[in-house]
Image 1 (tube, rainbow, N blue to C red):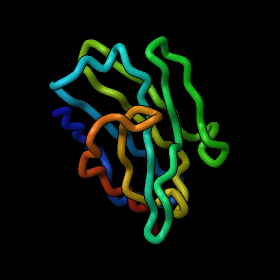
Image 2 (image 1 turned 135 degrees about the vertical axis):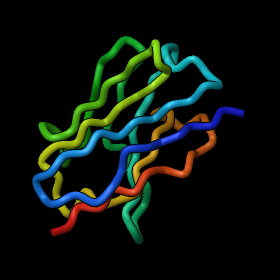
Image 3 (image 1 turned 90 degrees about the horizontal axis):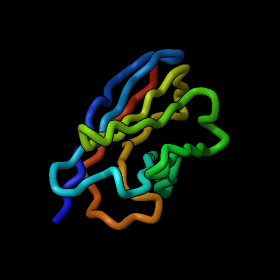
Image 4 (image 1 turned 120 degrees about the vertical axis):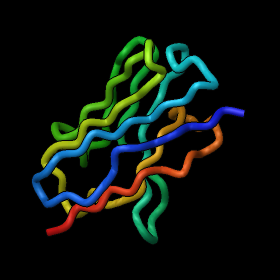
Length: 114
């Protein structure tokens, strides 16, 4: 059973930055496309960024130019660099394959507030 572990969230002021990490020791990330999702209170989980095994990235319009997804295959880790954060980015952030195939982790809370 693959367990994904997300970390790096926290409380940040509008305009601030955070870097999220997602790792697992039970599967080799390098062969999988991966993605970051988020779920805000009362809303459905949405995919915000994805990265293919070859490194091609894609973003939802609301985060384009502010978020960057990357991966370090040697560390079995996927990152999400979030800059210029806005209150509407507040959510629990999760990683998984773009078409989810792993058990969901606990996620990491991101709160953007002054």
